[in-house]
Length: 256
Image (tube, rainbow, N blue to C red; front, side, top):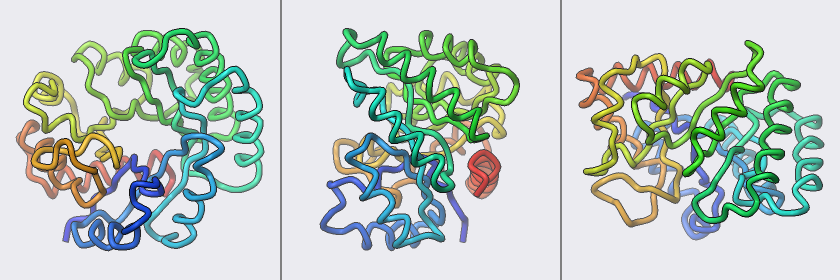
């Protein structure tokens, strides 16, 4: 059976409270043998680490502060992130980034929080997982500013233009491809055919952004083969090759 890595999944989310272990079983049955979990903020840490302890051979935690959780007290939250990074190993710093979709009033705070997390990633020699929504140029500018040759990571849930894809790759980052790639107007058909497999990761971002045919429903790692199928189709490669390459990329990036 193929081994697929879900490089971005909030499987610890409340939305899986009723069937978390069954969702894990379904993931494994679908070939998803590795699940990397991004943190959101202080409120998600306990549930995430609990799931990692429940399935340490499958689930790997990150530590970071999501841009949508950046408020006026973001420094306090980042102290906690830093404490955790000093306390034990994590797969990455994340998810961090900028989100101007919901609220543009905290852009300065989000930028400062991202700057700090980019430095933490370098300090701890960890990759950083970037969330960017309506803010690719602003995020890329901060990454470029911090890039000293040691910074690495992934633009998760990438659905930008071919030019943005090239810019992300030139910054030394991978592209995380999820359910949006299966959407009719998702744009993946314009971006992916020109990109080498060595630059890609697969992800669900569950419980969000379920791929077709589950669009609009709760997403879960077991649906990752639908993303895999679409990526393979757009690249003109077989699914086994894409699964192997993206799993290898994730293992190298996250030191799994």
